[in-house]
Image (cartoon, rainbow, N blue to C red; front, side, top):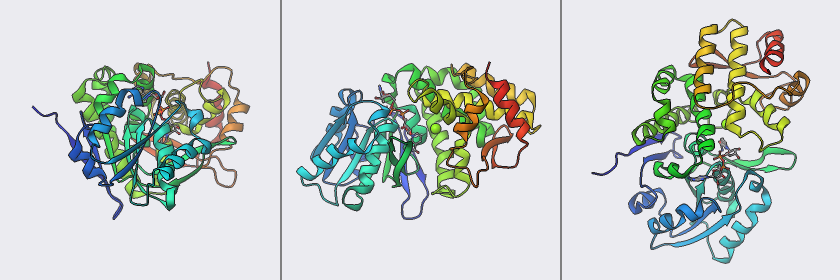
Length: 363
Ligand code: NAD
Ligand code: MG
C-alpha cells in the first residue's frame, strides 16, 4: 500500500508553492519533476547528509544534468565564502538561468543554497528538500535565505521563495536525537503562539513524535507547516505578524550570543527563551501560573532546557537583547503570550516584569 502523502500550499499569488509531506519522496521522479522541470540542477548538500541521501535523490532526478556540491558540515559554513565553490561549479558546467538549485540538508544548507539560487544570474528556481525537523517545520518554508557575517548571524540575505518544499519524513530516521529535540522547540512554538488545539494534540502525542512514529510525524509536520504557511502568506516580508514566529527568540538569541554559537543548539536556547517569555507573560498577569506550568512542562518533557544558563547576568541579557532586529527607536520589542495559543508582538509591557524575568529565570 502506498504511504499516505499530503500536499499543502503556501499562498503567495503567482509565487505560491506546494509543500509535499510523506515518506519516500526523495526518489519520486514524478514529484521531483513537478517540483522543478529544469533540465540542469545544482544540488547543494553537506558531508553529513550527502553520503546518506544524495544517491537516492540523484536516482529521483535521473535523466537530467545533475551537479552536486558537498560542503563541510556546520553553522560556521553558512558564510559567503562557502557560496563560491557552488557558483564555480554552476559556471563551469554551464548552468543557465533555466537551471534550478536544490537544497538537500538542514537549515544551514537550505539558507545558503537558497541565497545561491536568489543571486546566481540574478535568480534561478529553488527547491527545498529539508532533512532536519527544524528545516521541515520552519526554515524551508517562507523564503528567507542568507548567510552569516562575522559581525552577525543572517546579516546577508534575500527573500527568495522556493518553487516547492519536499519533506521526506523517512530522512528523519537518521537525525541525531539532540537535533530532533531541538527541532521540537520550534514545533512547540507554533502551538504556544497561535494554535491551542495543536497544544492539546502535542501533549498527547509528544512521546510518539520523539520516537518518530511515522503517522504522528506526518501530522506534526503538516500542522506546523500549515501554521507557518498562514503566517507567511499574511506577511511575507515581516512587516507585522510574521514577527510572532520569534516567540522565545529575543531571549533565546541572547543566550546563543552570550554562550558563543554552537554550545547550546538554537532550539535549546529558544526553549529556555519561550519559558522566559511565558514567565514574563505570567508576571504581567496575562496568563495564569497554571498556563505557565503547562507550557514549561511540555518543553521539559521534550528534553529541552527550561531556564537560561545561571551565569548569564541581567546586564548581559539586556546588552544582547538590545541588538535584536525587531527593536525600534531603542525600544525592546518582545513576543509575549496573552493566552496559551495567542501571542502578541509588543513594546507595551511593564519593565519590572522584564527585570524580574531576567533575574529570577536563571537558577
Ligand atoms: P543544520 O542544518 O546544521 O543541521 C543540524 C545537524 O544535523 C547538522 O550536523 C546536519 O549535517 C545534520 N543532519 C541534517 N539532516 C540530517 C539527517 N537527515 N540525518 C542525519 N544528520 C542530519 O541545522 P538546522 O537546525 O537544520 O538549521 C539551523 C539553521 O537554520 C540556522 O542557520 C538558522 O539560522 C536557520 N534557520 C533559518 C530559518 C529561515 O526562515 N530561513 C528559520 C529557522 C532557522
Ligand atoms: Mg528559530
